[in-house]
Length: 217
Figure 1 (cartoon, rainbow, N blue to C red):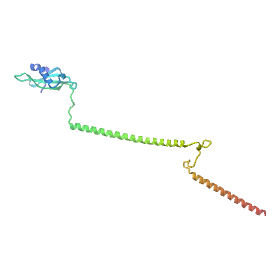
Figure 2 (cartoon, helix red, strand yellow; figure 1 turned 180 degrees about the vertical axis):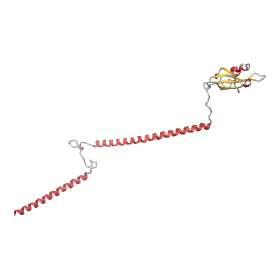
Figure 3 (cartoon, rainbow, N blue to C red; figure 1 turned 45 degrees about the vertical axis):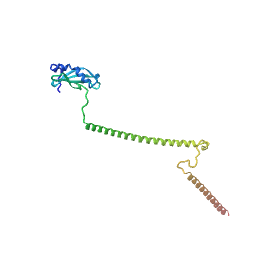
Figure 4 (tube, rainbow, N blue to C red; figure 1 turned 60 degrees about the vertical axis):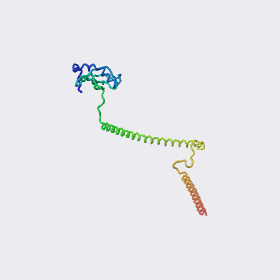
């Protein structure tokens, strides 16, 4: 149908249709609660002498929409209702333009793939951080174990392990990297060398005494 502004169609409209508010309201109340229908908001003259009576809409979800009832007069009868519906007015809040399902699905899948890739990158970055944290934690635990061992060694010490001047008494195996047995063997060899030297000196002295005796004779 072609709508005609009220100012241009007021003289051509059938007065009986313009006055058919009660008929229009009765039709609206059959499809919507009376509380959703507001006062009359004008009319529009349609093609063929049909008049669309408008009523304000009180539903919050449809600002700028109007209840519209199209009425007409069939020759030889009273005005009758052709249709009743909720139609948007100028500046009404409308739904976005329809997008085919295939297009919406492709956009959704693309967005999901991008989100999954972002989550994988984030998980990989967090995994690297966790590995570094684990290494640091292991190093810290090793250091703590070494400190505990040192403390245990100190706890095992008593007064018998120290000399009168307070210096620690070293036992075999106390010096790291030093073979005490080798040192003992070295001392034994030194003592043997000293004994041999003493023996040689004694033999030399005896020989010297013999030479002196021969000269005296």
